[in-house]
Structure formats: structure tokens, C-alpha cells
Image 1 (cartoon, one colour):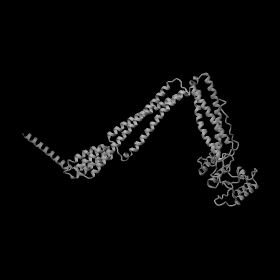
Image 2 (cartoon, helix red, strand yellow):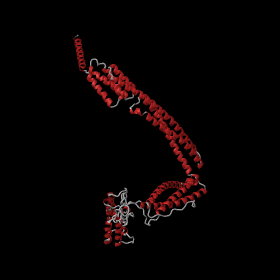
Image 3 (cartoon, helix red, strand yellow):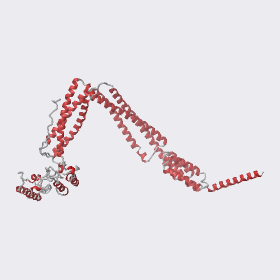
Image 4 (cartoon, helix red, strand yellow):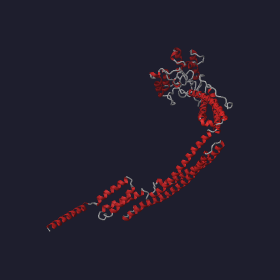
Length: 554
């Protein structure tokens, strides 16, 4: 009996203790503090752009808040914020209609005139979204329709190629017929691609306003558009695959024709025509190169012909490789009849002999053009004469390391006095051009006779320099003999000084020019720039002769 009383008493104490604990929790619970924690969690989700989570959390938050807001007025601000957060999250998922309904629900809870503008904005976006979706869907359908048409044409081309590959031999006529069919199909494909580009451009222009207003699709719409895009993507892959197989088949057909006798004969004929054109251009260039001196028009014509020559030589080399491959391929050569083999070898020998002549002539032309285009003083090839060229001359030539002494480097652009070697005398001439008045160098044929300092005009300084030359000829490079020889008798003496003074005096004593004249007082026009290229030949560089014709050889 006493035991039962003790047990009952213990149970009462436990119940009393539990009741006290619950009362303490109830007293410690603060809805406002709890709301702040929840609101911060939603704000973090917004910053992380987890809009679906924001939408779900705000709905739960509003439901929870409404249970306590009658007793806790401070919660009202949380409810209004949560409604706006939910609407924003829905709009960021393209759910504009749902966003408008959320604001309407907020308005029903607590009316606010500003809510009307918010709902209007979301409903306008919903209408724009529907229009954007319909236009996009229409564009994707048109795109798919055109791509299906392109695929059908590509497969038609592929079928023609496959049938052609089954043929044992390929004649030139059959190849031309195939090319005609393929050209027609390719034209249709090109027209469809043009139409597709036009449709795409029109769609982009027509829907630009939606992108500007940042209208996005909801999940259902995006899924539908993506489905269409995937279909279009599969069609593009199929088209690319068919066109790749067509290209591969065409290569096989071309190879089959190329290494058949009709194809080889066609290549040999093309090579003959090509070599005749090359030799004709070479003859024109050699004729111009034999002129002395070359005018600017001559130089321009040479460079124009060189561009044409280079293009023909590129085609020539490619065709020659194909012919050589056919000749050296056992399977190809053994397929030919005895008569065809004999004809092939005869024509091949003529082509190779002509090629040797072409190569030799091209080498001479290249050497001549290199000589013609040299710019004296421009050692680094940047088109200018400046301090960088002075540094290059010192580093590359004047202070060359010991291991270069046994094989001295040479560059015509650096030999400014024309003595056949590069010395400090050349450096001083270059220095005069960079930091002084020198415009031409002694080696440059453009240098005026009598213009000892190369400044482009005849003056008293030149008289002084010729006098100095007479007193100490060894202090001047040999090239100055030609510059100082005013009367052209092959030597420098007092008569040359007299001739120079007379020439300078005659210019000074000329009557003043009429109003509007130039008043130029120089003996010859100023030479623009330093070391202008002249391309004058000396006779040491041969030009060679191009073959007259290949017709007799063929």
C-alpha cells in the first residue's frame, strides 16, 4: 500500500515537471524572431537565383504568418514582402499569370493601389510571352520544314554519287553529266539555305522587342521549343552527314577519273596549256627586265606579272604532282594499253623538260626582283630607315662574333658605298640618313651626279666635298668617283669642280618664277625617302631565255 502511494506521488512529480517545461517553451517562443530567420533564408535563396525554392518557401511562409498576424501586427510587413517575393520568383520562371494572381491574393489580404500596376505589368508580360512563344514555334516549324527539304536534296545527291561509284569506268562525258545534275541540286539547296537565312533574320527582327523586354518562356513553353530545336538539330546532323558522304564520294569519283586514261590525257592537255601561259608571262617579264634603266611603270608591270605568274605556278605544281603520282603508281600505269603508255611517257617527258626551263627562268626572275626591290639602308625589312637599322648593322655585321669572321655575312641593303663589303663607312652613311640630311646613298643610282652628301640637291657643300676628294681620294669609296665626275670623262679633277659651280650658278641666276610658280632652286627633283629602289641592272645578272613554244613538242 505504501509502495503504491510512493509510485503515484512520483508520477505526479514527473507530470508537474513536464508541464513546467512546456510552459517555459511557450513563454520563450517569439513569432517575430522566427519570421526574421525564415525571411533571411528566403533572401539567400533569391540571391542564389533558386526561384522555384523561393516560390515554395514564400507560400509556406505566408500560410504560417497568417496564423499569428492577428496577435502579432509586426508580422504584416513580412506577409507583404513574402507575397512580392513569390510573385517575383514566379515571373523569373516565366510564370507571369501566376505572378499576377499572387499579387491579387496579396491585394485580397490587404488592398493596396500599387498592386493594380503590378498585376497590369505581369498580365502584359503574359500576353507578350504568348505572342513570343507563338512566333518562335512558327519559326521553328518553318525551319524544320526547310531543313527536311534540304535533307531530301542532299540524299538525292548522295544516291547519284553511290550509283556512279558502282560504274567500272568513268568517261569525261559521264562525269560532266553527273556534274550537271549535282550543280542543279546544289542550286536548289543554296536557294533553300538563303530562304532559311532570310526567315531567321526576319524572326530575329520581329522578336527583338521581346528580348529587349526580357520576356522568358515558362517551363512548359521552353520544353516545347527545345523539342523543336532538338528535331532541327537532328536534321542538321543528317544533312551534314549526307553532304560529307557526297564530298567523299566525289573525291573517289575524281580520283577514279583522274587516273583513268581519259583523265590522264585531260590532265596532260591542261598542263600543256598551263606551261604555255607561264612561259608567255616569263617572256613578257624578261623583255621588261632587259630595259635599262627601269621606269616606275616598268617596275609596277613586273610586279603585276609576277602576281599572275605565282598563281599559275601554284596550279602548275599541283597538276604536276598529280601527273607524277599517276606515272609512279604501278596499278594506274599497268591499266593503260601499250599505246597509251607510250603516249603518256612522251608527253610526260616534254612536260618535265618544259618544267626545268620554267624553274630556271623563275629563279632568274626572282633574283632580279629581289635586286630591284632592295631598299638601301632598310636592314630589318620594315620599310623604313631608322635607328633600328643602325643597331642591326652594328650587331649583325660590324660586331659579328668571332665564329662569323671566317664567313662574313653580306646584305646588299647594308653595302651603302658599294664597295662589296660592310664596314664602318657604311654605318656612317646610314647615320647621316637617320639623323642628318642624306636622302640617297652613293650606291643608289638615284643619287644625283655631283650630290656628294646625298641630300637631293647640288650646293656649296658638294663643291667642298669634291675639293676634299681631290686632295685625299683614298678617304672616299670608289663609288664617289662616279658621283664627283661632273663632265663624265671617267676621272675627277678641277674641271668637275668648275662644272659643278657652273651648274649651281646657272640655277641661282635663273629668273624668279612667275606668281603661282614653284620657285624650285634645285638642279634635280628631290629624291623622296632614303635608298629608293631603282632596279637598274649592271649586266652581270643574266635573264635567260624562255622556250618559244610547246606546240612542236606535243
